[in-house]
Length: 246
Ligand code: SAM
Image (cartoon, rainbow, N blue to C red; front, side):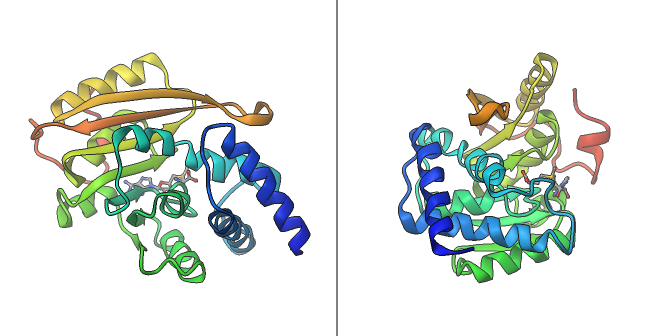
């Protein structure tokens, strides 16, 4: 892509982000665009995303990932915090969040090939000092790194009650799960709140954002770890999804 097109996408991204009160430097926006182009490139070899235009990618990958940012701001994140992005896929929202916040993080996906691709993106974007990627399930990570994270991020990974159960053993006390999803039904939210109670967590915020260009809306929901879980976590792999607590 030539420089003129790149700077026009960067300006477009800037104006989208400003609409949500998100202000990033030119260098940050260029790195975000570079990530998106790497994803599109890799998508020719393996199935990483159904989105295939820069215009939609700007909104549905970059902006959508960064909609977690206002929530992280309210929760008082610090750039020295450590986060894990569960079910990162092609690195969303983990890579954009790391670029925007400066936080260090671990990006995991249960599909090893995806984690390997993300490792390549991290290297190419010169983010290796800040981020790493691993092919591992959330439940297995919790067995190895219990309480190691200040934040757990997740977009479009699982039903909210499942995410709450995955996040609880990974978070340190007062750490937060910050998740983005479309169309959360009342019964899903109710089940997530009840699950949170058993998992020592409490819902602390819920925000709804309209995406530009009629591309739908997103809900960003956060839960804070407030106490020890009343159930032993993590349960066996797959249990959170196939036998939810509620
Ligand atoms: N978060 C990315 C995004 O928003 O573009 C990818 C979303 S994709 C629909 C869900 C991803 O979660 C898949 O790549 C899948 O392999 C991963 N996943 C599902 N369950 C998981 C688990 N228990 N642990 C780790 N990754 C998981």
